[in-house]
Length: 283
Image 1: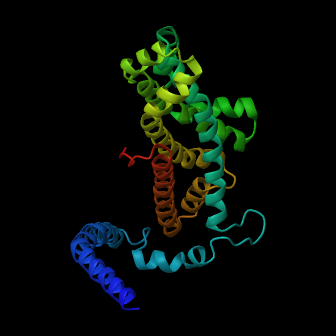
Image 2: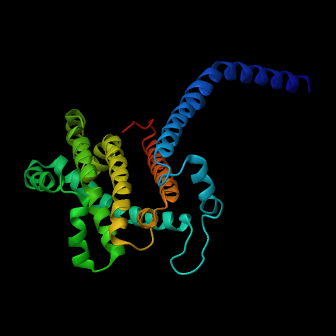
Image 3: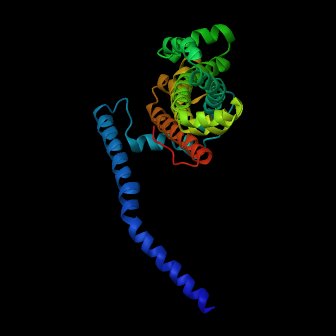
């Protein structure tokens, strides 16, 4: 019993010591500075709203106007009258489908380019031509092919998700040390085993960097695509509320879009840490 009490006292003292060391960092870097940043944005919004109050609401007015959306994000009040939670899930579904399809295509193509000079010479011009094309330029082509808004939006996300992942995967594969590959050849390791045991583990940080960039771009694009195609989605919600001159809901949508993008990037970063057993790198 005495031993347990002493052990508890030791842990308590150690915890207090650790908290004293971490407290300045937590209070300043995690709480104080981000809070000041958000307060600065809110004050700027408030000042602009006061200067143009006929159209733009102040932060308190926007909060009051959006209470129903905030407190009841998943309501269903008839056809097309859905809470912002359902609209957000519809957009996330499109993004994830297009993004995953793009990853399935982009990662093998990146490996092919990184491992074969002939493939690089053949495919690189195609990438350089299509990479600068605006994602929205693909939308009319997608609508002509599918004649439906939902698969067209997914197709645009698919095209958008290709380039960064291909380029970063090819860079990672081509950056693998030649010494490792020479040792694998000496050991007569078959090509598939070289890929799974040497090239893939060494390339994973590059691959995940490409995936994070592609997912961020895809989330940017889906809002613009849904504005043009309509239907159910957070992008159409932004356009519909603007058409009604309801800027309070537009501000709410902007906040939701930003937080969702942050969560998606964080999720991929955590997946990267789990797969590679290394801290994620910033992009």
